[in-house]
Amino acid sequence: MARDPTQAIVELRHLTFGYGEREILHDVSLRVPLGKVTALIGPMGSGKTTTLRLIGGLNRPQAGEVLFEGDDLSRMDQKELYAVRRRMGMMFQFGALFADISVFDNVAFPLREHTDLPEALVRDIVLMKLHAVGLRGARDLMPSSLSGGMMRRVALARAIALDPDLVIYDEPFSGLDPISLNTVARLIRELNDSMGLTSIFVSHELEQTLAIADHVIILADGKVAGQGSPQEM
Image 1: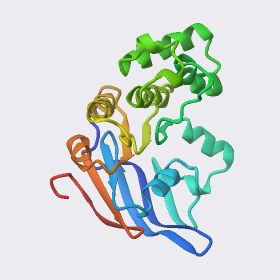
Image 2 (image 1 turned 180 degrees about the horizontal axis):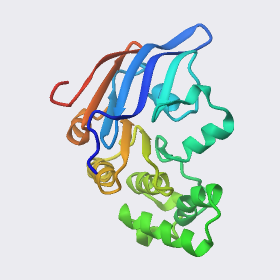
Image 3 (image 1 turned 120 degrees about the horizontal axis):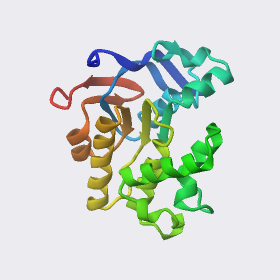
C-alpha cells in the first residue's frame, strides 16, 4: 500500500527547550514526513543537534510536544520511551564507534543489547548490514584501522541493525573527504528507499544535502525559518 505523502512520523508542536536561562529552541513546530529523507540545516548554534536529541528522546522539552506517530515522547515513562527508541537508529557525529571491539561487535551491539536472538542469527544480520554498506570484508577490523569514511559506514550499519522506522544522523558528512562524503550520502539515500526508512539528518554540506533530501527544514535563532522541498527552499 502506498504511503500517504502528507503523513509525518515525527511532529514537534510549539516546542521550547533550553538550559537554565539560555533558551535554545523557542516555539518550534515542524514535521518529519514518513518515508522521506529530511535535512535540518542552519547556522551554528541554531539548535539543530538539540532538535535531533529531542526527537530521539534524549532530552525533554520545557514546553510543547514531541510526537512520534502521534504519541508524545515527553509524557512517556522510561519503559515506554525505551520501547519507542528501539524503533529509532542513531548515527552520532564521527560515528562514535566503540574503540576496543571489532567492526562486527560494534554492529552486533544493539542486537545483543536489545534482543534475545541466537548468536547465529545475530551473525547473519550483522553480515547483512555490513554488506548493505559495502563493508562485509571489514568485519574483523578494529575501528583504529578504519578511515573516516569507513567508520561512518560501520556506524550506519549499526544504526540500521534493528531495522528501525526512523534513522537520525548527526553531521554524517563532517570531516569526510569528497569521495567518502559522496559514498555516505548515497548510502543514506539508497538505504532509506530500499529499507522503507524515514531519515533525518543535520549537515553543513549544502550541495550534498540538497541532492539527497526530499524535505528541508531551516533553523535560525532557535526558530523554524522555513521548511519544504529543496526546490522551494
